[in-house]
Amino acid sequence: MSETQTGARTRLPIRPRAARFFVMLAVFICAACGLVYELALVAIGSYLLGDTITQASVVLSVMVFAMGVGSLLSKRFQHRPALSFAVIEGLLSLIGGLSVLLLYAAFAWFSAYQPALVLLSFVIGVLIGMEIPLLMTLIQRIRKQEASSAVADLFAADYVGGLIGGLAFPFLLLPVLGLPKGVLAVGLLNAIVGVAVVLWLFRHDLTRRAYIGLGAGLTVIVAGLGAAYLYSEQFEVDARQAMYRDPIVHAERSEYQEIVVTRSVDGQDVRLFLNGNLQFSTLDEYRYHESLIHPAMDGPREDVLVLGGGDGLAVREILEYEDVGSVTVVDLDPAMVDLATSEPVIRDLNEDSFEDPRVEVVNTDAFQWLRDEAEQFDVVVADLPDGTDVGTSKLYTVEFYALVRESMAEEGRLVVQAGSPFFAPDAYWSVGHSLAEADIESVPYNVDVPTFGNWGFYLASPEREPDLTVPEDAPGLEFLDSELLAAAQVFPKDRRAEEAEAEASTMMHPRVIGYHQGAWRGY
Image (cartoon, rainbow, N blue to C red; front, side, top):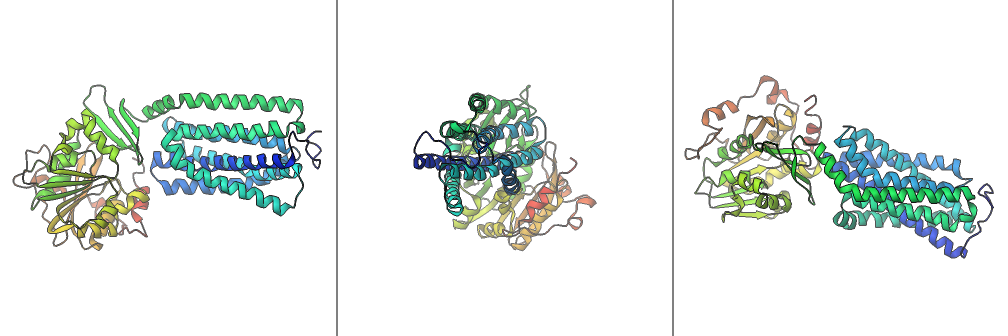
């Protein structure tokens, strides 16, 4: 009996009830695999670009649309449901399993990440959309039943499979295998289950040529995904190196971010990157950190709070003042602090600042920590990543600065790294508006850091507008002095606050994200 006999019952190697169970199991597993592919596309986007909401929106919207297209296309293949389903699962397992590596390659070598993301989301969505209609036909081939009952059973297995896939992705696959290997392992499972169920249960519906072709195809897919699995670590190393000018001397993916350290061939330029974004270069990091720390140290400074600063470089500058009694560092990622205390190059740079008995490190979210902390500080340093996504934008909101205000002593001072007033002026001036709405007086200033470009800060105080000066007892500085700080308060006419269309950023309206997204264009 061939698949051209659409209405005929399938001759099965086992009882219909058992066959139906295995088909439902295949639905369950394939649904779990499909959701893992979706989550993997979102995850790789957040890893490489750091913009989780945008990546999730693109992936989910394109895939849902594509699933509708796939459902319509499936009508063309209903006359050969078993063969069609096996081919679709083979393609889905191959494309889905390789999706992370393909996107990594598009980002590292071809600068075509967004087109590749949309294309992969669409293709995977089409293939997922074709599954259920074909499975519906296969179920009816096993045993006729009411369409509503068959649909209910199929969707129940599909949704429960989605639940398992959604939970397995963050709690099992990522911690145990990592992103590339985890998705490749899912692709292997998808191929074996999706194609094998047809080769076993529906072999009598296949021509000899189709049976041999599916068997050969499954072998090729498993071999290809297996080879990719074995090579994935080297591929990741090669792709990562392609994104950086200098040789990589350290790379790891922590629970929160990708951490990369590079060193030039002559050893003079060591750079730290988080999620591909430059954090410092040894050529000029002293310009940034002197400008960030020393203006805030002109006054009481017994107790200092550093929000961020897991590399230890801001702490290095703070500890230059012998009358500092305590430094509390609140940094989300323990991996960053571990790097700063174990990597010789970083330790030399921060002068083993975390080993000082005055320093206490707390690895937690700065926003949540401020909500729970009752202690007050003389100096607060906000050395945080730019507010380019939901996770970081909350650290540049009115609500966040209101919490910071509560943690400041009466004559306390706050310094904020606020991004580039030249490349991202709206984002920069938005910080000033947010500070003002939190009843904190601030003074904006900007300096040139060659590897960053023009960079801006705010020195702020809850009681009065602070004086922007260098402490009289400041240690010998390479870059900063009072004359420079006086000039640093002057902004070019085309980058002044009145030229920006910026508003305060809040938790409910994180405007700073949009300001960053529209920045750096053409540079």
